[in-house]
Amino acid sequence: MATIKIPTPLRVYTDSQAQITVSGATIGAALDDLTAQYPELRPHLFNGGDLRNFVNVFLDDEDVRFLDGLNTEIETDANLRIIPSIAGGKRDDGSAGRTG
Image (tube, rainbow, N blue to C red):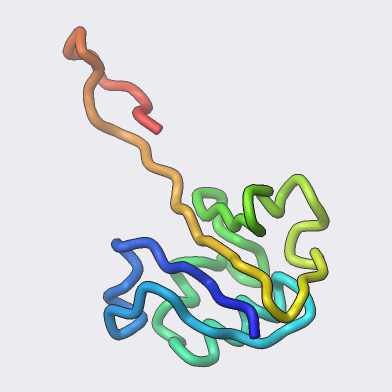
């Protein structure tokens, strides 16, 4: 079965689990299985049926947005990672700016 690595800020919704085993033949099906196991996680990943803009899903080292998105087919032993975008903070010069 495929596995999804969960980033630290979202582990509060997965009973502190860092890695979850999921089933599904596509990224979308795997994420559906993940959110079926942990329903409180869904609104943090999805806006309706689409991934939120700040949520990045990687299949190995490839951002799935540059593949077939949620329709990207996966092998049963796929390694997926959820990586939220980080923004905010201050630059070294003290002005606000994007940091990630």
